[in-house]
Image (cartoon, rainbow, N blue to C red; front, side, top):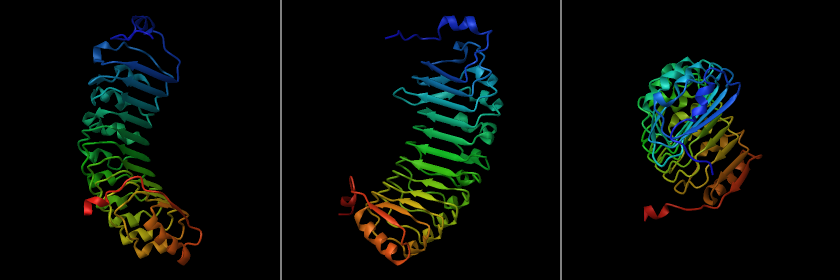
Length: 301
C-alpha cells in the first residue's frame, strides 16, 4: 500500500510551469490550507474531483484558472463535517454547471450568489450550515438536491424561487416537518422527490399547481397522515411512489382525476383504494403493493 503523505508530492512543483492536458482531474489529500497548494495549470479540465479527510479544507487557488470547468465535486470522507474555505475562486468559472458537495459545513458557499447564477445542478449531501437560502432566488438551477442534511429543520419560501427547476429532491432530512407553502412556485418541475422525511406531517396545498409534474415520491414519510385534495390537479403525473407511509390511511377522492397516472407503489391498505380508483376512472393504472419494512403505528397506542 502506498504511503500517505501530509502534503502534495514534491515533484508536482516541477511541473507547475507546464500545463496539464487532462480533461478529468482527481486530487486526493488530507487537510489543506492556501499555502500548501502549488500553482498548477489545467486549461483543458472539464471535471474536477477533490477528495480529502480533514476538518478544514481550502479549495485550491488554481481553480480560478480552470476556465473550461463544468463539474466540481468536493467530497470529505472523514468522520466529521469539514469547513470549506476559498470558494470565492469559483466566481470566475463561467462554464461551471454542476456542483456536488458531501459532508461539509458550507455557509460560505451560500454567500457566493454569482456562482449559483450559472449552475444547472446542485447537490448537497451530509452537509450543514446553509445559512440564507435567498441566494437561490431566480437562479437557473434545473436540478436541486438535499440529502442527509441533519440540521435542516425548515425550508424557507425563498428556496422555491427556482423557475427553471425540473428535478427537486429533499431526502433523508429527518428534522423537516413541513414544506414551504410556496412549493407550487416550482412550476417547471417534472420530478419531486420527498423521500425518507419521517418528521414531515403534511404536503402544502400548493402542490396542486405543479401542472408539469410527472413523478412524485413521498416514500418513507411515516408522519404523513393525509394528502391534500389539490393533489388531484396533477394531470400529468405518471408515477407515484408512496410506499411505507404507515400513517396514511385514506386517499382523497380527487385522485380519481389523475388521468395520466400509470404506476403507483404503495402499501396494502392504500393499494385497495387505488384499485378502486383504477376501476372507476384510471383503467391503465398499475398498482404495486410493497410489503412494509417497518411501521410507526405503535406511536398511536
